[in-house]
Image 1 (cartoon, rainbow, N blue to C red):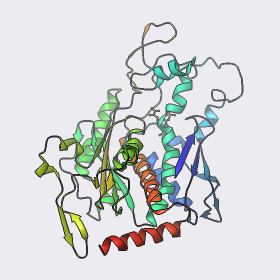
Image 2 (tube, rainbow, N blue to C red):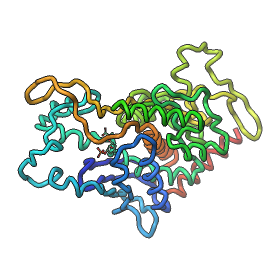
Image 3 (cartoon, protein in one colour):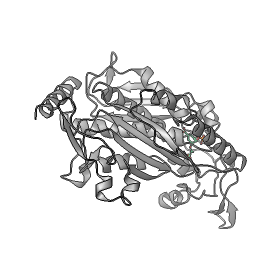
Length: 388
Ligand code: EPS
């Protein structure tokens, strides 16, 4: 599947177009809306989230509840738009001359300065409307379509937050524990360890008091992926590289990891690599998963475990030193309403981004027109592997 998103943070709405989505899939609007609401949650979010109530409005590609194979298009309305109608007017009109419209003090760490230079824009407003992480609502919506398809293949995805600021989980949780997903969803920071969740919330509170912001790390787990998605044959087909692209493109994400990738450089080969075993009912399997379910750029049949680190949000209440782009005088950076910490939301976006890549890789291997055809091909492949 391919997709394109459009829309400004305070424009009328966000828009998405998905092409090459298989036909014959029942599209559950409630499920999509649930994913949109999960993205809106998380301790540390700013005032915008109490204005919005993100809901999908499907425009095409679905008839009588089922995908038809035609391009799917959807809209997510921005409720806040009513407060921005003049500033965001698409028709020619006079500048409002307000502080909200005429922004000249770029935030260190944001797209502000380079965006203005690159597109020859007169105000930073033109940059931040699109570079805003609000775009990720459209990505979560697209990802929800992918998840619906993946569920039919018994592939499921979840995420958790392992670090916020300098608070991190001491040990990795048991991702095969059936209660873990409940613990994650119950935590306001998507951390399965309750004491750690509390400490993370306190850290966010402290940052808020200091007019500061926080980043952190999250992990995305994808279970029951058949071996052989992606390929070692060409650089652009490597599944780990594609997942890296999907996660790094989430605003503010600065680092990506597959399994124990960050530690891999400090371990010896004998200690890092996952030994291979065989049993009649499991087939080929590993007892460890340092590779995060990907070897040679292909899924190997184990859980896919990927991680990403998000930098602290560049909009801070205190502001930072910057230069006014008009008079070139030293100044303090733009102070707009923003989040203090959005790592829990980024984790939900990570699930969506990974789902899109996994479904695309499934379609490459097993076909893309119709869901029944894809499921038949997967079953045949699984039978072949079992009887090998
Ligand atoms: C966001 C909407 C934005 C920000 C945030 C994410 O709304 P507003 O700018 O109106 O407060 O809360 O975006 C950023 C942190 C950013 O740097 O752009 C959302 O819907 O996720």
